[in-house]
Length: 199
Image (cartoon, rainbow, N blue to C red; front, side):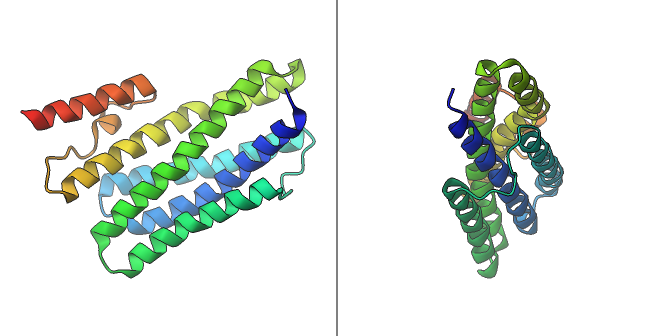
């Protein structure tokens, strides 16, 4: 495994989590649904903790958590773009549309975040003993939360879009009600939601 790319992955993942804090803070301004607001509030707290865990991991691996590589600068710009999109939607004074934009922005952010943690997990399996214990400990403490963030956010976005289209929607979404934390369970929840609309 290339140590320079591991460093880049960890620094970008850390910057992405920092951006995630800003994304959730802004998304909370857009949330109309009370259950969604509560979920995003919880995810903001968890994401703040993820920043702390990744900062500690970088420090333990003798990486400077403040280093801003060219890749990290791009990650920061992407987070700012997501926040900017939500702010623009809020400025249009259509609260329901702003909530949908926020859902889409959260799904985009969580998709990358989830991928980062999957890669960190792969690195943990392939690293030397000391690095593995540090990487694996960080991965194990966060991966389940990242699964939940992604799959639940996808469910919220789908169901709120359906509602906006005047189609039957399940709120909270099945992913939320069934506490989905895997791709298989998320696919089953989607199918269940589709089956309900056919009846």
